[in-house]
Image (cartoon, rainbow, N blue to C red; front, side):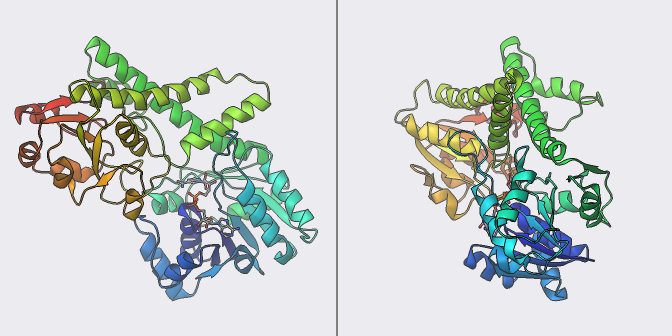
Length: 429
Ligand SMILES: NC(=O)c1ccc[n+]([C@@H]2O[C@H](COP(=O)([O-])OP(=O)(O)OC[C@H]3O[C@@H](n4cnc5c(N)ncnc54)[C@H](O)[C@@H]3O)[C@@H](O)[C@H]2O)c1
């Protein structure tokens, strides 16, 4: 078993730290945020992730998981150091590697001979070399290795995805370093690909761009279904049985979002531009995704008799998908904000967004889904929280000024809603 430092206690870092401790490694996880570290030390997870709290408590009790403030304290004496810091979209559309550089500079002086720095953040091709350079400039000892080990977990199922991944990908110039990193996953049953750094880095972007394109594609099919009076739910069922297509990521909706797809597709497009490659297909997927959000706003406008100015709109769901508390680049937030900008009064309920929801400009926050609907001209379902299926819709209809629903997630049963007197608008049906 190895001693591991994890830099960053966000969605990826915290999951990585807790799961590696669960696999038997000695893990020290460091974050800049002292308040986060204080809570973690008491066994409280700062994020909503199924199973994560239990693993944190298990790690703390066994002594295999500790939390400290800062990258240096996490990495001192570690055989492996995982960089799990954010790589947001910069003003120019490229991935902002400022946090990666800063973390590498911090850990450089405390690395022991033979240590391996593993980049788990999503970073463009060339970043493994870049980390290597920053480490050398920062005074790292000579025989420190660097590897790329992109992470494929999904928020909401992060622990399960980490412990039961579809694959483990490691990229390193020195194959022996790559193999050492892959061996940390002993106990995890998944295909392992040890490759060069550029290919490993590209796997992550190619995977996210493919998934985003798949959603953009099915949204386009849904829009076409509306025009020709087909039901996209039936179409997707008929497509998904083809094993070459599959059912996953074939759900039409308000467009993709979240903390990864928008920034990763933008970064890949920049990589293509830098390489003088016209990635028109990806550009199209991004443009049509933006149009999909606008299309949802238009549906709400229709439901409000053609004008949003002065309308009252109830919103159910703000997180970018169900079972997470993450609001970053959420299509739900973008659409709710567009409704406010168009002059609507928007009253929103989300079961997990917490205090962060209150910071979204112009939104009224409701205590529960019924409260959101009081006197509303239309209800918009923006996140596919399961609990929204099982509400008392007679009560919902009675509390609204006009019983109109825009179901951007195709979560509700149109026939049942219409029987209750709702005007129903879904996506692609
Ligand atoms: N969130 C996901 O679903 C997901 C999935 C796969 C990959 N990724 C990638 O993983 C990376 C991290 O994403 P995230 O969602 O976990 O980000 P996050 O913002 O949730 O977490 C980053 C954490 O790093 C800390 N941090 C930043 N600089 C630090 C430093 N110098 N020392 C110590 N701590 C530091 C921050 O305080 C924060 O807690 C990104 O590159 C992202 O693209 C994310």
